[in-house]
Length: 625
Image (tube, rainbow, N blue to C red):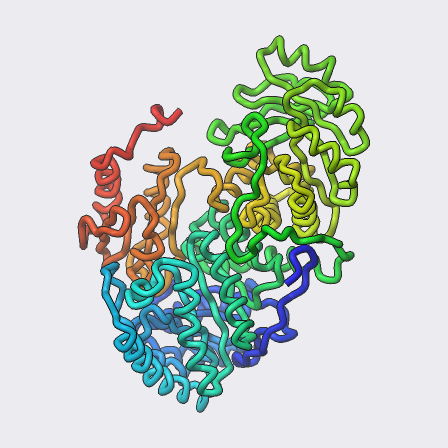
């Protein structure tokens, strides 16, 4: 894998009905129904909407044998109406259901965490090496039966590992780690290979983007060592809805797509399934544009660890770099005043003139050639103001007395002269620029060159767009920033958009990207699933009610999960959890501990708020200002 130059990872091809996956095929798009799989008509209509929106594959939950058997009726009804796209059965807990589903679906997803292992209890269970081996043999014997059925019916499988449903057996041996997730997958893959069954795709997901990206990277490395090239299904589980779900998904998936990983994508939103497809298509199409781009001659720093990156070591300049959270720089070059009090930038780039109205909170940045005169006006207004230079103004930088200086710097201008200047001026913060088709690669190359040269000046990533729709900016900017944040190369973000979007929208996007990358928290985080046939309450209306009551609780993590498949596990690092326990029944959690079970849905949101209050984590909106 080349850090700086984009190309897709080479994989084996998997036959899934008439739409093959991996190999030389395009990246496929998919979604999942949230209707009852026993309701043939409802499933058929929803599958059609997903396909009409551009979905290649559609997954349906199959809790039991009845649901698996009804896949036959759904399949027949769709084919009769001319819809030939493959159907995928989603199986948890009952291996027999997978056997039946393999007769009627073109692909079956099984979860190693609950295929044969007992459901997760979060309890420490000690296994001797002999006992561990015996458990693996039980899995092998049962899995081989399923694989033989798939061979007979030309059914593909997906081995789908979820962070939230690792078995106690894996947790005991490996802990709640990327290594444990990878081993959970590899146990099943090794059995498939031994049985000469290669019609296999893989997913390995988490709601935490850091865990998700590191785990997929590690999985690819381990597969390569063992001679495997299976295609990858990418997704961020329980990403949520609205802008948060879009940003979180684009950041995690985009970070992997940027490195050429991924053969099919599912953007999991707590919305109608067909709403996921346009977002996924925008993301895939945007990254695919990098193919055959001009070569970037980057040099990887020796200290960089791709499989387990840490934040690059930098000097601290004011509140930038060092141990500080990444900053947000915004611009007001159109001389307008508009901000969201929840997302106030740390710095505002004003270019060449004083804005008509100054915002409370941020420092200001002016172009260096007007800074000396204009800064007087800022100082009179009680504002700090700092100069911004370009790479042709190195002499002026040396003569400038400012304690903080910004330097706009494209990769190809990062010469020996500039490096020498940076080494004697630690007060300079670089604003990394790129007009390259693969801007991720060029930004990476810039920061890696600094690391190679031993330069520790902070770097803020400057990204420019021309978007008129908020979703387009959210998807593209998050995809561009994902690898840079998760690689530890980002001390700040500066989004500049020349399209028809408000500054408040742009600022919220910047803060949302940093939160999705787990490097700066600015609002409540919601870990919510997209819903499926297992969900027995109105997920979308519930999320809206929970958000209305808690969105001002900055820094709190709240999980809203339709069922127990991934619920307690995927929201294990959430502060509070709201999980479907049965038809119209909810269980409430404080982290991993279930506090109250089987609450009537009508009472559950109020009881969740009461639980938050009882633990001292609730405050009023007025107190949050």
